[in-house]
Image (cartoon, rainbow, N blue to C red; front, side):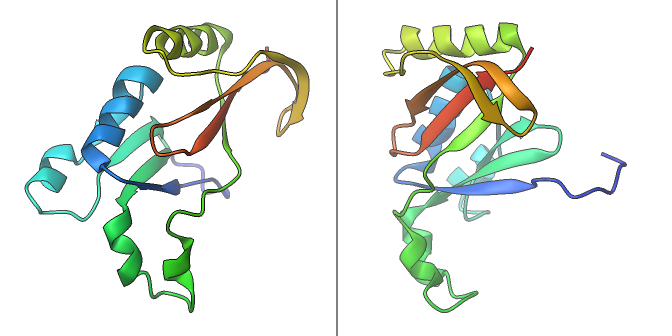
Length: 142
């Protein structure tokens, strides 16, 4: 994390129940939960899950929408999902993610092959939805 180039820091996902969402991301997706105890104790306004050492997903409760006043109309973003967020994984982690999702009866799409992305052509990819309707693509390049 010492390189000071432009990177993705976080994505805010609107969720109905941040604790349940964190549980899904931990158990089904394999991400590390952050600030769950603090959120449950009312000490922070949302928990997060760690994607990698540089990037987190903030799990914002829909109740925070009314306080979104950093820009005119920002509160209207609650419930308006981004089309999808793409996770690039090594091949073994890609397979493990798909297995965890299937074990938990999370619907997954068919595999796609040779999709273009930030690193060129991805070997395989698939899509899944979290319990709040946010759509994710998982892919691997090697």
